[in-house]
Image (cartoon, rainbow, N blue to C red; front, side, top):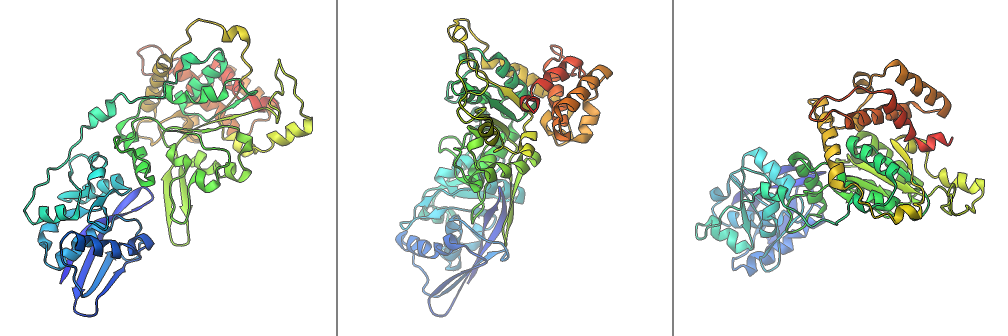
Length: 515
């Protein structure tokens, strides 16, 4: 007897439909799975056999062949357990094969027949919706994640016997639906970090506001205890709220990585990832035998914070260059090639020298010029060129720390940032870019035109500081963002770039000024 059940496999953050074909024929009792199954898929033979028996059904003692089509694509994960089990039961005529037609199945089965959750449910649900299936049978713990895709019937199940009874007509399972509006608007418990808690550092706060408004990469340089990490950790509090499309794209990454929380099926807060400086290049950009998203992809649409930047291995930092430029990470293997989104805002922090006090007005630096040069050379020139804003964060004097005056809150800063982003969304509508940081040479020519006075000061800066072509374009992008932040109240049109905008933008190339 031959039966077919639909399931899917995930590659990168996308899923494709897999047809699980089961054939039971006379012969010695053999259970084979073909179609390029990985180890976790091959191991499903023992899980499925025990689950069927322990659920009260007879397991056929014949020759069983399971084919996972298309056969030229590798199949990984434990999500094939449930479709294989249902295929065997259908081929044994314990369940009607016609009843299973049009439904999608995924889930890991335990030895006693319970259905356990699996990763990659959201990409699977998107693929199922696009393929026009009647419904999707998923583990009970994955129900909320699958229901994020609207217009698709989600049937959550807890055991193999429950699935059999449902398709045999003995039990009903109500389709699960979730209120996406409530999820997106839910007031999540935050970390309580706010810019009003930061004393002084107005220059650094201004730089962070500009960086957030244009999604620019930023480097904070200063002595220990000056507040670099404190400032960086508060950047998400001034970023615009997630749009639904951004939330879905980020959630797909977290779904594949298995990082979704049980009670939160949708990532509704912008990610903030802060890997330790001992992270490997595969851990940062992704990789492994079975390619998985790295920290840069987990920070997609959010912030990647690299503290103590020179302490990261040179190879790790150089691996960041391509994702910072393209917004994607492509991992190639001999037999596969996957891409993960990696459009993040980089915020990095570093000391000016090994002891940390070079240029400090309070404590004296004990490092030699050679030590300082060697320390700063750990970050390559091409890497620094890709960081739009370099800002110095000096030690905070006592009079600033002891002030009782209330500083500006993150909510107030976020309003200006969101307003500037609205201007950019209108400007780039239909151009497949969303922020000033994403502009290329064509956009710079169209949207960053300078008058004679502005062009003159920029020419002087390029000559005296020796700015590269990439650094030159960075200055133009920053100036464009500064002008966007100054748009007239209630107006959607941005101001033209003026002399003062270019002059301020040049000030945010601190490391270039030290050449």
